[in-house]
Image 1: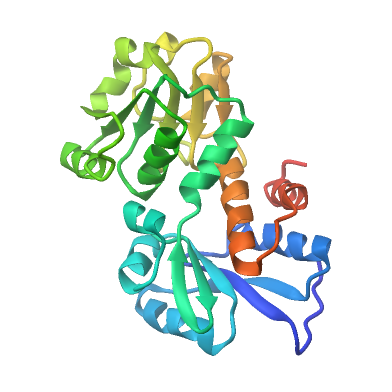
Image 2: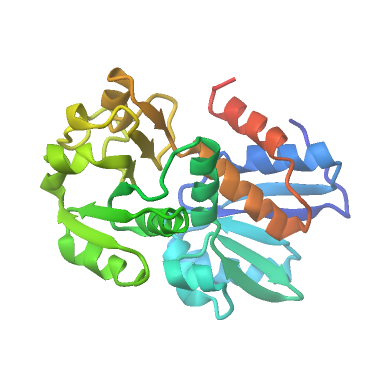
Length: 284
């Protein structure tokens, strides 16, 4: 899609390293085209050493706002003075908005995930949910599941201490921390309504960690925060057993729509963004 730039075109974008693979420009630019807005969304390849200067450039260049992706989310949270309570709770920022020359950080990941799970009719209320991992994605998942009224959240991670530290942030949620080998425990898997992967394990061709897929309930949902052209190593065995699955493309869509509204002050045309995302991922 060609974009005509003028002297009045306003800029938004995304900071990341790498960033060329990002599907966000396709979504946001499709939204601008749908709404007839003279704005453009640009990927900025920002390395770690450049990050403070890149943040300072946002108001200097009149950029309305930027998304932040790996590996910068946690560091941006440490660099910004003004940010939402949600960003502070998660310890990560995925949106930076310029407001009258001041930078404000927010995080739409948990809200985007909660919206996607709801749109998929994943029944979480009063149920047990398993989260694999203890990084930034896992934090967003825990917050989303707590908001969806999960009865119990079981965090499974290679480093137990890291998972315990993350669990301490969510004192109002019922969180149980287990070692990684518990994924192969039929008793644990068998009572879960959702198993969510918040790690990069299995992204490539290699199989996922040992997991008792055969013990999963027929209504158990397997969700991978990672999105890829082919089913990940985490999702593939679940699909082979006829279980419901989804990858993180829906979360990307919903968090992106929330970011669009933060940057532009108008409701996002989510179906136009969905169509552009699917085309970008080869899912038309």
